[in-house]
Length: 217
Image (cartoon, rainbow, N blue to C red; front, side):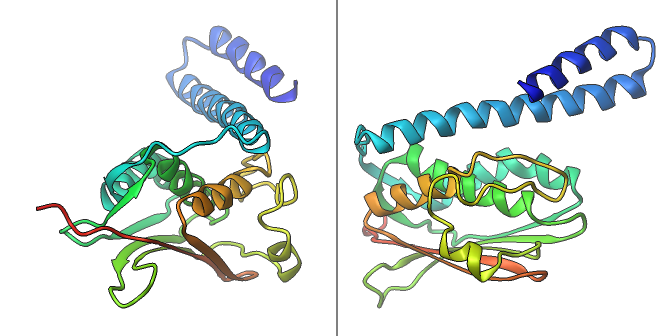
């Protein structure tokens, strides 16, 4: 109830301070952040319920992972800008193709990239790289790195357990503790792998690898 009460209070301030553009901008920005967090809370709870009950299936088509990553980056560019975070991307021009569920792959990368932004302080850097390692059994590799607050070795041990990794971001951003659990399950469903390396106070690197298909002609 607390976030909704805060949102209600902000709406009252907006009505009361309609004469002040500066105050309106500040209140609307806060309201947008609260509503976005609540929408993500609902989405993650719904995904968690589907995963736990086994009601998850993949709608497989040939997808370009670079295109999906680019779309996710576009949706989170404003979040990075608001924290003065440099968002650096490196994707091969020819694309990276695999048989996958576009919506679930988007959820994987959205969760990971939004986490990187959430736990990186102002002025930091988040990097997204996609590359092909043709001699690997899982040749499509995605790396998401940040210069954020990092994760302790104890937290790493429980990182993919539901509700165990919830903690506020550097601007007090909230989460459900379900995002990484959902990521792991969706990566597994695609026959992929995910590993996380982190140093507290220095940052975190997430590596994902997926099976690929030949590029489109």
